[in-house]
Length: 431
Image (cartoon, rainbow, N blue to C red):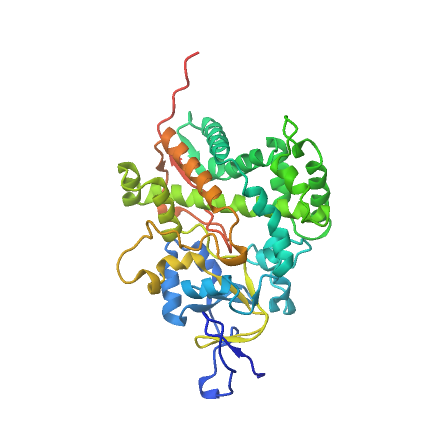
């Protein structure tokens, strides 16, 4: 084995890996069997799975993404922060993943999608100066948003969605409320009418390579140079500002910047809102605290981020050289999953007693370092408004047992597949 840098997982310092075979560090491929990521995504008690992995492996566990494809799952708070802040030799460029060199697992696996090579020059998969250049337009546009306008728009769109099912007494809150909410609210903010917003979001969820990706760029370039680029008063819309930002070097970069923003933001908003509604329907203590006013809505949202995190892992990192952590040898090309969904149960920060994280916003759901979410305050505003609007209008109850709920096989977000509820139907107003 070639000599490699030893890194302690926090400071990024160390010596050289020796050849002491009696203490040979564990490599990713060494264990005959490991926990599958599917077990994590499908679990109702994710914290119990994380606890078992910590007991067996420490804060970095080998897991299986698909047959023949493995990654390190990192569950320690301080180590995740160090990795996210670039204190270890990692990159977000997933083209360097050593899994591409092996026999390719099922290409259509949703758990492998974040690791697939892409033709898109997207901000989340770039590092260094290119990342900074692509990130600048997003920071600048999101930084000048009128929060009062966002709250009004979100509330109006949510009221419209609730109007569609309030008179029936039954609803799937994921399909009828959670899923369409980001498309309508983000679309309206960006300057799109509902039909255009649907086109943009469909393009954002499409293939990342080949002819379909090229077609999406062409379609978005046309939209961004059309009516969606300006408001009725002639002022540029946020989408128009993005399209004309000097940091972008091509129309493709503009299109991919918009696609990244809409794809990641919509999934994150869906997951956070769904987890909030899920807790309010399945956790009596949480629901009573909300109803009794002992928890403000912002504290309740923080509790969700700690105890039922909508974010399972940050975007994958790939090791660019060998390094040691604990008794593990991370080899160049290994994938690492920064398990921010596990930090609420990390005994190193929560101790032995019950703790829900109330009052703390150090949960890492929005990431850390250069790749942190550019607008967590806007995400909070949208989710808070959507949750308040629903509970103001309706008093839903879960229509099945909580153990019958299912989560989507998603590597990065904790996304419910359905959330069926019943409630007292609203009476239609008299003519």
